[in-house]
Length: 388
Image 1: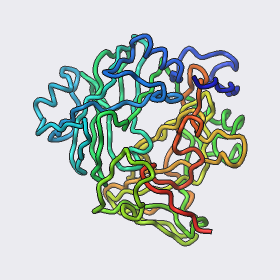
Image 2: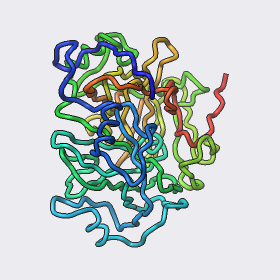
Image 3: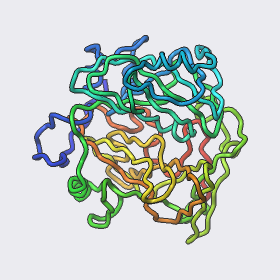
């Protein structure tokens, strides 16, 4: 078992210091307790490594259903009832299978839930899933919203999968999404975010210089000051197949066009092209917090800035400059070409409290892939050598 993380005093939103909140996102050890207590069940044993500091990876089951299009079951139907109506064919994932880009698949997950009345869930793609432009959304029976698990839900979980840029190989047991569970309200107010930033430094800006309005503002780094002007990557339209279980395997230049700019210049986003960019700010997530990036805000432009967008407790949380960890942005413009310029606000970080500090934190010690990252593709790609 991992050694307990050292508790760090931080301001819980609108609460007195030192009091353990009754509501909030459940940490690692609470998730393990739910597994032991039968509220999270699976067709196979759930290994401890599958549970993250404030989330839990979910595994694909054996069968994928190719369906005519995306759907929600609504309050009066199950997901399988909809699959029976709209299924085109089935695919066996036990030995691996190709999911073609531009197609929609529904896969029953290995895990199912028997939640207590006061516990609800939120799901999202894992970081590598978002960086591969694999569009995924979790669905439950009798639901009218993606990625939400209603309080007290009992039943199976399903994943909608639609590869957008690359066709991919996945397997029974592949982990593409993750689940957070929470009890009651957990979101920090803007005032609480400002207090927390003043106390621990959520981004590398001095207190008072941060932009807080319905979350903490995050801007894009297009300075071109590093890596010979490299600021991002754009997915190629006709690229080879990607096996998601092959780590550090693929040459980035077979799949991505590097984007270089000169200082002072921005980039125009082509409609529906997919880009990997990075935030200008380094981000730190305190041990008693979890963070979600708001994916789409028409007030700042007709583009989406993140498809995964969840940061576990401990992300970027190191005591010296080596802990600087940028957020990677998964960007797609819609409708019209859109100009992005260096330092432009492109997204906001929403902070949630945890019910207690997790017994393990995000980082290299638990095999996390993106601690200390700058501009970085998904873990399936070889790391390019930086220019000196």
